[in-house]
Length: 208
Image (cartoon, rainbow, N blue to C red; front, side):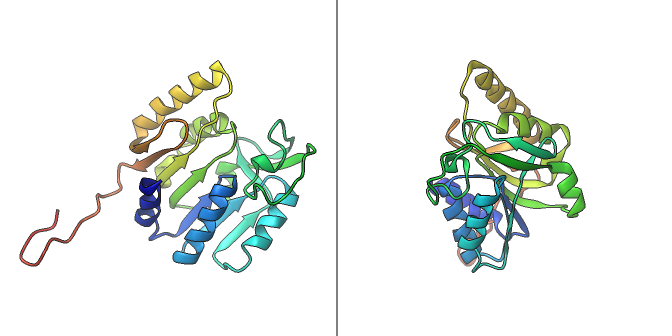
């Protein structure tokens, strides 16, 4: 994941970093970002119990805001399906909760507008299959126009999901450049307006 960590360093001159992702991996990254950079980080947890744990774990960082809802294609309270346990949570491994439950969602465009978000340096998304609904919706609404880097782990569980994954790759390729590609395990796109990093040459040389 050296390339992925490089994205963090490149993206984080940062104003806003929404962590739409779930799992312990993202939890550790959120702590790393918060401790190293002055980034404004938003963590979204659809389930109240998980949001409370995340808020407690990250309370030492003033730059982190934990929301007791996820961002989705519509607002409301929804039954969490097969990933309703902490396996679908930002706080993976912090609970042994196994029963199903409900989760809260807020429509993503309305949340961005209400909070006057104009720029997002990095989105990290790991939402256990819901990406096949959310990403096309974000494309349709033009949300990626304000995003500098977008990282996502995909979870195809059917032939339909596989087709959706290929369609997303094609659609994303039309609006952003691939920064690195590990297939469904992890993909990263970057804005076409993101300038290449300028590397200072030795004295008397030139910048690349």
